[in-house]
Image (cartoon, rainbow, N blue to C red; front, side, top):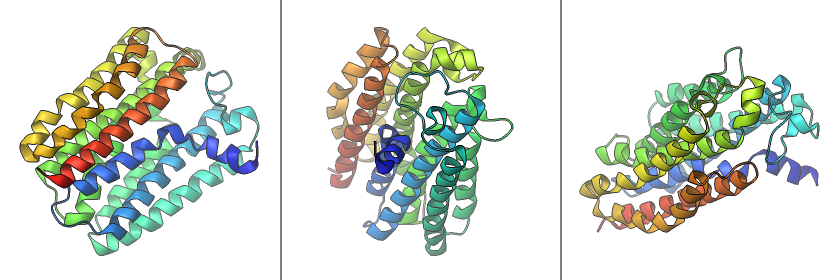
Length: 288
């Protein structure tokens, strides 16, 4: 593999939909005509944070030895392909990119966004980094829902309207649920190794079967939220067309997919999130 392909793989592109979808949906939920520069910079913030947290997790899990025995794509530090210090620098470089873009958005909207941005960076690092990583205590799903659902979607709408609307809050919920479903898939795949390594993710805490049920509930709830959203903007129901894309991953998880099979489920969940987000975006934009 070339150096570039190694770093690209280490950025975990299957998780990128968790960053892209909130911005697209949040922009479509705006009441005003979108400012595309602000939308682009919000996208930069979200994607840079996603890549940063992926590198940060690679670094922290790698130096702790959590990733020494795992299923799925290799990790940069655990595999020895890249030095820990290089991965750590990459993480903070992307945190810096997010901070610069966020600083501009704060300057043209409200400076209190700096506090939100700083909290997001701290949460990203402390997921597996620091003396007491909350990802090792079963709190990862909660923080993903908050920051890749509520904060990312509502924040994107705010930089457009400089206001928080019921629609912005409403659309953030299914976006957050699908982002959590991505993490649940990842933690389900890594459950055996995490248990041995002492990483007490939610999947480790509640066990294999409840985690599979949780995955299905999260995806189903994302679709069940659409009737409420349609009361605010009828076009939101267009996202129901994404339902067929949910059938295969739910079926695979409930039937006991494990190991490398869950890598495919992770990709399918990201694809579902992208399809759902794109359809919801179109429906919101059309209004109908």
